[in-house]
Image (cartoon, rainbow, N blue to C red; front, side, top):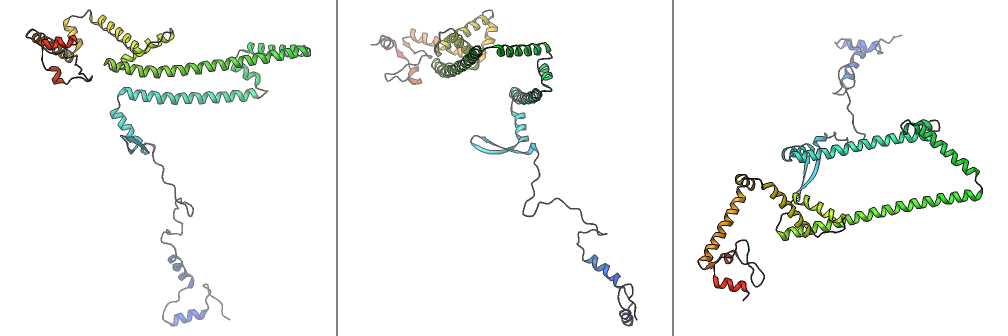
Length: 350
């Protein structure tokens, strides 16, 4: 009887291998290289599995990596053309081109709004906490005392007044109780009516205020264009209070009247400012460009006087003439000398 060897093969297999001239190799030793040969190329030595990476489930794409906030793009429209800029590029452009006042205003506006939101959220949280305590009968009295700044006497007085009212209502007969209920209902309706009337008055006031603002904006622009005045912020700062005081006094002014009053006040302020200046200080205050225009105007007036003495008159430079059709004459026609007889005939209307 034959006994299997360690590899499980019969001795006959071993003798046949020996007779072929080669050394007998156990089957177990040949199985190990075969197993290693069939392993995947990415498996490291020793049979340990390779490190795995998170992959999306079958049929789904992996989420793209999060973009840093500074590199997030925002769509902008400049001169009708759309483009995209990152937050960092917009911040760099503002830092380069915006002045200090604009940056300060933007920062104060956004920072202030953020702080107000935080304050409102904190107050809402505190209110919810206090309301939850008030709803709890076990914490009701402590919460009321805390809300009133620890004034326990005020809470005791309120409780006493409440129970006195309940006792008085309990001692009333049916007619007295009905009369008290009617009085309370009338008081409630009266207060509600007053609140509605106040809300209507405020709404009407806001409507009139908005309409008046729009009307004055149109009238101010029209009056400034007619007077040849530039409607600057400094001029508006003088005009608006004048219009507001006139409205409060019950005597509203037109846009022309407001503009004339504002110009008169500004003129008075300038006269008071320059009245104590000497000639050099006044020249420095007016500026070189303004003085050049004044000198040119004086020269034009002097030439006009000389032309009148010589028998010809030139129309004033600052007063362009109109033709029969109502149009202004051209610059060449306005500067063309006319005879003295023609000038007097024209001004007599003949």
